[in-house]
Length: 411
Image 1 (cartoon, helix red, strand yellow):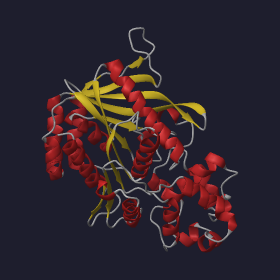
Image 2 (spheres, rainbow, N blue to C red):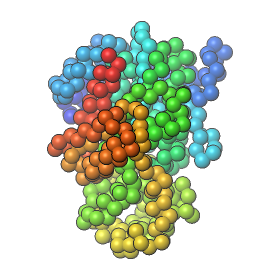
Image 3 (cartoon, one colour):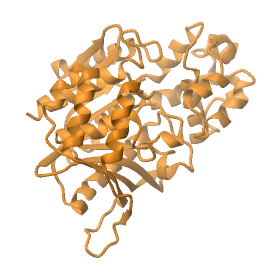
């Protein structure tokens, strides 16, 4: 889910957009004077903010979120925002992906924060497509504290919106995020800003899951390439079979499109390998799900086409026998393959979750935290439960905890 800033901040954001310096032109990396790149394909300066504009933004934000005062103290830069396209791969084939990058202006050598955004179904709400969207504007502003902010669109959005979004698919998510970080390194060479070889990861909901997947991949396979300093995943569905069982144990579930989105992804990844949709979803929903996720409808609109009644949405056999009927083995296996198991991480990690979250229950974060401790991670991993906070309400607090911690680590 995505953040909505309160209405009284919108006027400020509009003013900032009007007075920011804009330059929307495409620059291609085949210029003879530019370094050769392997990942970065194009970059476009969307807009830049003068330092005074960033300072004005933070003055208003601190009134709304007093916890941001510690972030405001570190504002030292203007920012330049780029849309980039870059090369990645999907199922062994070359694929063009895109994202948004916010870069501090002025002198310095900067660390990178990779932010993995939460569940989105709208093509027009991807970071590179809608850089003026509230949550992205806030993240862009964080660059003024001296971080380069990398925001991948994910496949199925931006330059790749002609394909389906592989929602909660481990392999493609990790590949897309890491290849964007490689493209950001090349952008730094092309645009001549300096990176200090430090990487921080954070994200919320789907982005929390993606953050932990990328963290594990870096530690296991790419530690010599990426100097990961800290990770702060928030409210992620780390165990997808647990999420399935949680939903099926409820009488009603307020976000039916979450599981519909996941199932639609599995169908598109390998229709023959997954349990047939009519064995999982009742009519008419088994016919609707394959056509609802075309990028034109918000999650709220898709929910309205489905039902919050669990017994109305899912077949009786699936609800009662998902653990015993072999018919569902392939689905269980695919969910397992895209879940995350804890490991003996060497990276400082804060797992953040709202206590009253009913979309992705907090127990899923507590469970994986306990598993991290059991695997030997000890105090390197912390579990932070935000009291009296649901899934949507946790977006800003989790983000402030993450950014505040990263700022402390870079002091």
